[in-house]
Length: 324
Ligand SMILES: NC(=O)c1ccc[n+]([C@@H]2O[C@H](COP(=O)([O-])OP(=O)(O)OC[C@H]3O[C@@H](n4cnc5c(N)ncnc54)[C@H](OP(=O)(O)O)[C@@H]3O)[C@@H](O)[C@H]2O)c1
Image 1 (cartoon, rainbow, N blue to C red):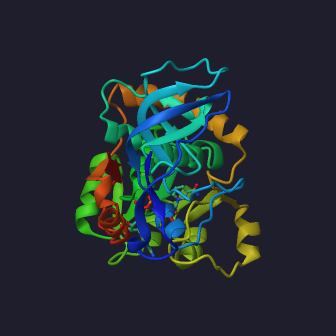
Image 2: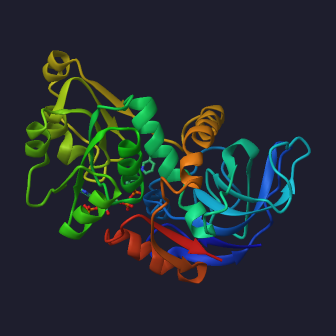
């Protein structure tokens, strides 16, 4: 099969096409003929050698954490899918290829109202955002939530989900254009962080019960200040850097919880449980058009280097998708 392989670690120029062996499938795995693959910032880090794939190391280091396509082959114990069915899946790598194999419980049947690109935009963003809001921060009706990087692939889904769960949403973004867009997704207030401190906006609402943070270092102090007593800070990314100086007294006095989350390093069993919960609780709302996968750009796999430059430029609203 054809795949995008890494010639080394570095800039987009290390992305190259090569012929590699088809993936093998285990008894509970399906082989997916990939039609579309979602792109993630983790792909940029892995390309630079800063985000190695989990063990066991694959024979070829192929990027790509999510895809949509048709089921081409089934392991002997597969019960959830049949050949030819349209599925989308969360994988630990390998989606920038014509085929990828995955445990059947890491996939879901694609709702009929979605294109291949829309289906491929779902797994990483929806699972990460749903897990952060529901499991890590226990967000529900009446919660006030601060969501950073809200126009990004994960942030834009988090805004929709939090609104759908009945929370009041304050969203931070880099431009006025993004601010209007996240309001159209359900944010009650958007803050252009370059011109207004987000802490001011959070305090004006009486503080927030949860913060979904992708920024890290630069936002640590104000995130802690923005939380009400008993609030939860969920660290999903560290876009500004990973270091923070912690005043433990403030955590103690406000009885705060700080939780980190990572999807790819989680044991397979935990990822499967999350996928099943997502399929039961959230996928029906996507099928009904209540929640939407949001596409910024779709590019052909031939344009993969350009797609990486586009994602790195941080202009995107929603997801960037590669199509065969
Ligand atoms: N823990 C996990 O399991 C998990 C899963 C998925 C993603 N992530 C992480 O979550 C982060 C977001 O992922 P994504 O796919 O949503 O990325 P994305 O679509 O590329 O969006 C990221 C956005 O963050 C904003 N940003 C970047 N640097 C910033 C900074 N220094 N300060 C404030 N805002 C900044 C930019 O928007 P503005 O122009 O609005 O500033 C950028 O467009 C990444 O770090 C990614 O690695 C973690």
